[in-house]
Structure formats: C-alpha cells, structure tokens
Amino acid sequence: MQDSDALFRNLAMLIKGARLLDIPIIWMEQLPEKLGSTVIEVSKNLDGLKPIEKDVFSCVKNDEFNSQMNEIKPDIILLAGIETHICVYQTAMDLLDRNFNVEVIADATSTRLEHNKEIGLEKIRCAGGAITSVETVLFEIQGRATGNKFKELVKLVK
Image (tube, rainbow, N blue to C red; front, top):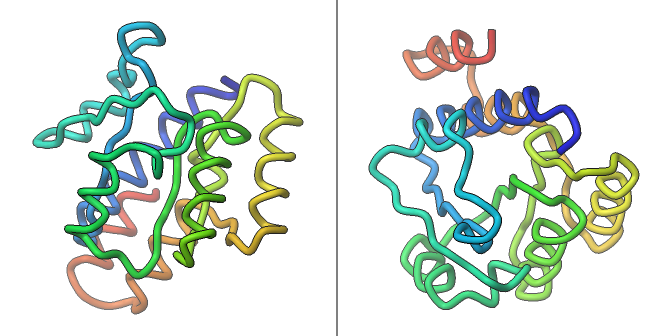
C-alpha cells in the first residue's frame, strides 16, 4: 500500500475518533486466511469488535454486513480501508445505489498504485459520494469547539 505508515495512523485516528463520538463501526476483512488479517497497528484499536470475513469486493454483498447495517440504521456511512479502487469503490457504489449518503475518508484509504486511488475516488465523487479526510469528518460530526469530547478530539489529532 502507498504510504502505509500514514494509512495506519489515519485509520487508528478515525477509529479512536469514531469511538469517542459514538459512531458505530463495522469491521470487514477480505479473505484473511489468504490475504492476512488486519494489521496490529489498526486492529489494536478495535478491541471488543469482531471482524466480518468477506469474499466479495463490495461489503453490501455480504449478509452479515447487511444485518449489522439494519441494526445500526445509519444516516451517513463513512468508508475507509483498502483498496480504494476495488473494495471501497464497489461498496460505495452499492451503497449509493441504495440511496445512502456515503463519505469516503480519502486519507484512510489506499492502494498499491497511487493512480488507482485517484481513479477510485474520482469515480465515487462522480457517482455522488463525498470525499473527505479524517480530521474534517471528525470535527464535522463533533460540530462545536466545546466540551470534553472536543478536548479529547483535539488531543487525538495532534
């Protein structure tokens, strides 16, 4: 993956921020027995959660993902992970087809080749998905510069 250290840092920040702001997380893994499990730099922040294994590129084609989505009933879906132009892209497209509001966290996605990330993000944008960053989305959800959660969020991003 391109700049994997930054990717892992941003995914960890996103996960910690989501937990701080009470945003539900669905943890997916693509064929972990063949491709490997989620790296420790990321998975150590997902304690208490269990990954859902999938063999399809789009999470929407996975029954357990859909079951969790039905429980959560999200207003907006934040997508992160790898690879931007394959799994993230196909998941975003399927969610957009189902009329969900989708935001892809660009700095929490990656690909082996940078141009594939750019292509995946552009296709999502053209289809109606929003492209954002970890800091942008966390502060957008926080919405105000007061309170304990704001203070914790500031510490998290510094």
